[in-house]
Length: 375
Image (tube, rainbow, N blue to C red; front, side, top):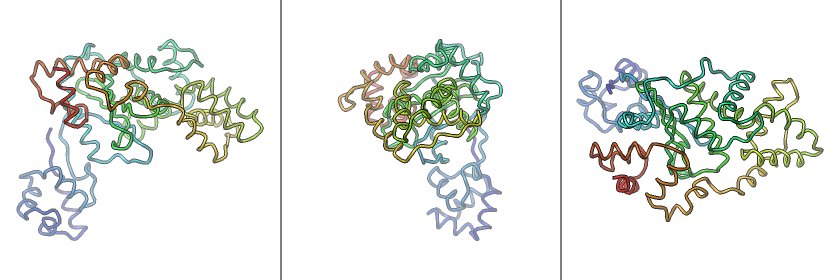
């Protein structure tokens, strides 16, 4: 990968901020000669200095750095509510993508052919209805059937997407899922955090499936489409139409909230998805949207408390979990070839636990356990 400083942007920002090379050097804790080397394209700042320089000049990473890397990994995040994707998040995910390239030759499917994707993905309600109806047909599911994990997992395989199960915790990580697409091999790698509510996890999987079907989209367009796709797939128009009638038949707000909870329970999805899709149906038909009292948020919280996190259900007591159990249980549950790819690469190339640490985004101690089990 070739990176270089966008010297014009840096100099313009310095001038606007009234900073000379000496002032920049003092602020970053480097010599004036180092700053001069940067601005004359004779050297490139180290990552920590680069981040400080961007902050000092109030420039984004994209504004400060010119990336000449061909076929750079394309990244999409499914984040925790309220979090923002920053430049260093993208950089870290792209670094994972570069390491994943080493696993591509070991993939069990043909990577020379493009998987089937959508031609012109958009968020139009009728378009999404037709697209998700076709996906439901492809996974042998009717218009109102419940989408389960097996349906989603097998669709990922058909789209040449590799699922990478991860245990990132509920608070420590910025992302709940990462979608990494490698343009040079046309492969997709979907990292899913298992330590989360089962309903949210199902939505993330459907969201990531939306990404796999729409590689032509990027940024906010990609995220918005994936969200709309996930909602339409998990609670389609036929269910939303029925729900609109049933919810409105309830006399009180409390009864309406209870009906939403019941419908969510039937489909094993979040009540937010049920209400959101029902109101999108209403808007499409020109009908009044359903409004619920603030008690709805408390009802959703109580609803979620009834269910264990997916990691607890799938893996049991994580504190007693060893590497072999983690690999076997997630490999079987997600029908993923990831660990077999990793096993072959580590053995053939004699790679150490450092590679596992980077490619799985985990602490070195855990990476050593995984490495030992695979080798």
